[in-house]
Image (cartoon, rainbow, N blue to C red):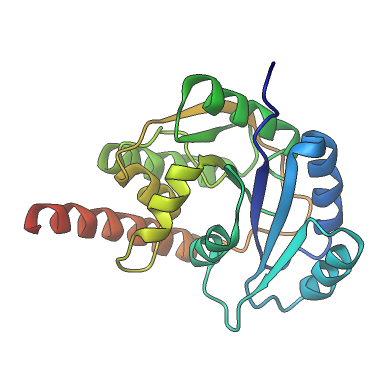
Length: 232
């Protein structure tokens, strides 16, 4: 007798994604079928009508769980707020802009379940942004990989086991950086290659300045965690 597949929560930080939320919901439903237990949509104080779309989706589908933040906390803090609400045996984190294909979610889950891995990243592949942004992104990810021990292609498209989710939500520290935090848990990690799509919903919210700030936040968090471990 085979057991039923573990139920899955999907956590999505939402900021200026009103035009892609319905399509994301539709494609996740097709990709996961009955395994999709809940879709946690974290409204990070959206200014573009995303809140109304989230409300409409929740009204029509009881699996949709809105989480509303009173002020804009940023992507990583919004993800952690969603992780604290998610109840699935596996929790998938992904953006709402459809650059990471919902159809790849089963691949991440399969790898994690088969090999008992706590976090499976969707390893970024393809020409999904300008050449200059790709170069700076890869440089930052290489540094992050060396410092935190995560795969060099890791981003915020990731499937997390329940032990990993519990570990992440128990961590403290300065402004959070999800990928850095995952690496610092010491639990087994891997990635599987996933072809990313180009953005269809306007320019990225991450300017060059925002990307630098995000990189610094990750490095600061890793250093804080390492020093904390030495002092304990």
